Amino acid sequence: MGITDSDGAARPSNAATAKEPFEGGDLIVHYLQQIGVEYVFGVPGGAIEPLVNAIARGMRRGGPKLVVARHESGAAFMADGYARETGKLGVCFATTGPGATNMITGVAAAYHNRNPLLAITAQTRLETFGRGAMQECSDTAVNTVGMYQHCARYNSLVSHPKQLEAKVIAAILNAFREPHGPSHLGVPLDLMRSTITVDTAVDLTLILRTRPGIDEAGTAELARQIQNARKPVFLIGEGARDGAGRVLALALALDAPVLVTPHSKGFVSSFHPCFKGVYGLSGHHSAEQVLTDPLVDCVIAVGCSLGEWATAGWDRHALLNERLIHVDANPENFRNSAMGRLHVMGNPAAVFERVSAIVQPGKSAATTATAPSSQHATKQHGLRVVSSRVDRPSPNCTLDEPTEWVSNATPLKPHRLMRDLPYLLPPGTRFIADGTAAKGWAIHYLHIPDRRFGERRLPMGISPADAADSSASMPRLQDRRQESAGLFRTSMEFSCMGWAIGHAVGASFGRCDVPVVCLTGDGSMLMNSQEITVAAEHRLPVFFVVLNDAGLGTIRHGQILGGAEQIGWQLPEIDFALMAKSMGIKGFVVRTVEDLQNVDWHGLVKAREPALIDVRIDRDAVPPIKQRMKSLGVGH
Image 1 (cartoon, rainbow, N blue to C red):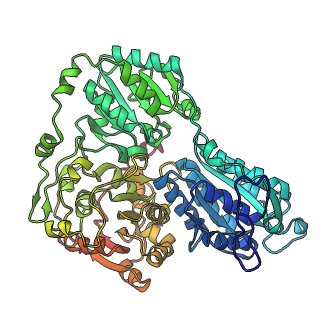
Image 2: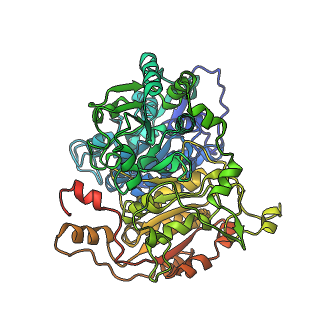
Image 3: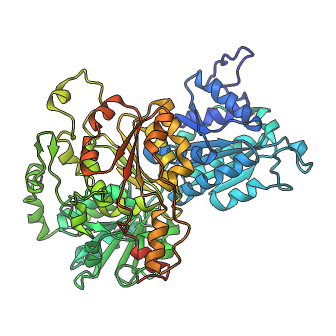
């Protein structure tokens, strides 16, 4: 994995060799390949060219592949999506000056999403610092390293060749420390070309496999309090990715309600017998009812950041009070739960493995023994195939405007769009919601069928004959997803418009055998639509579903609810299906429920290539943002 000969062929590498020379760019690629990174997302430029050259050389020996984004923020969004889908390091790069500043928004989103990212930006040659070089961004010009300081867990300028290896290693390790997040390195052009001798015996994979311990005393006390609780409630957050299954098993044994935050909506099926809804902004009334039940004496928040979205605007009556117990691997999250009565530090999966071995369910044990089988649950919820159509059960939570959820009205209600989409696509489909009204609609009304049920049915439009045809070029129906990734994702605190477009593309690179649905709006498409051409270029099965209301819907309805001037929300009427076709992507216009159901979803899945569905929604439908307006101090 050393430097290449003049003909581009890689020199053989011997793991036993103590030292080996690398060009700076090749050194970076060496460590990315070592930890299993498969893709690097970026936009080439003059000052970053040595890294691009190194990626090209690395690709010839099985290293990470180059994906060229259309805008640097899109590159970071894609890296964020890849990291979330795979659990691996997301990597993005940009050239100096405007390339580096363009990428900041995407890196900031990953910072709030707490996904491991390595952002590499170029600098002009060291000798040009302070001299007004073209696109100079040193500390005496437009200081990009200074800008990244506020959205990176680790941030540094490499100012000497002998610093590069240590800083690359530090950047990678810091991206994976709790809380996960982006690292940023600014690397001058001449240092990227320098020859650096390094110790090839260094193996980052061994370091990254190390897991921190847990609070043994706190875990024992947690088990005691759960055992003695009259009516415990579990609230699952984004930090419980690996431990959600263990929490659910314990909750089922105790017959305890389970809630999720908007961040973790994809971790628990809406049809699980213990599920009572999403708590937080755009969440469900049933979840609030559970938390305000006077019988509840113990609320266990697992892996929750407890920011504004996850606490319904920091509601102390329902959640942030003395009943709260907080379990988290990230001590930074405890800052929002200081009023709680117990804080347990540790990985949620490890903590609840211990707790489950201690807690004795008591009366709930009988419930567990007679718990309905998956077959009984399937019958209970009425899931069955009828003429290639799937009956849609109701989730175990209380929806606002339930009649709109089943409405056949034209123009199409966003509620109905969210209801039908999961049944039009195969089990395992990922749903990525943008930082627009699409996010609120999806949090409240998008309910993905339980995977156990999904594996016993066929997606709409897929016939039994197709499923039995082993030669059919379609993805497997079974969802073989990584449990930690979840089937629904959105950007919460930073809430970037257009984030989902790039994120969905990155997620598809991480797992290209299942469809990815990007739920976005017309405003976001006008900002970031160019990234759909990356999906077209690489034939990724990403379906861009545009909620088109010819306006900035959240702005418009926020102004109405808040009694503000109605201004600045209007957008021109755009035919996004026609735009997609001009970019080489299949496009469909949907105005009615029948239009939605008549899209050839089976054909799209079978083709394994992107499509855009331009959905003309009812612009007067009010998204579930009333709690958000309350937290802003406006509205009724």
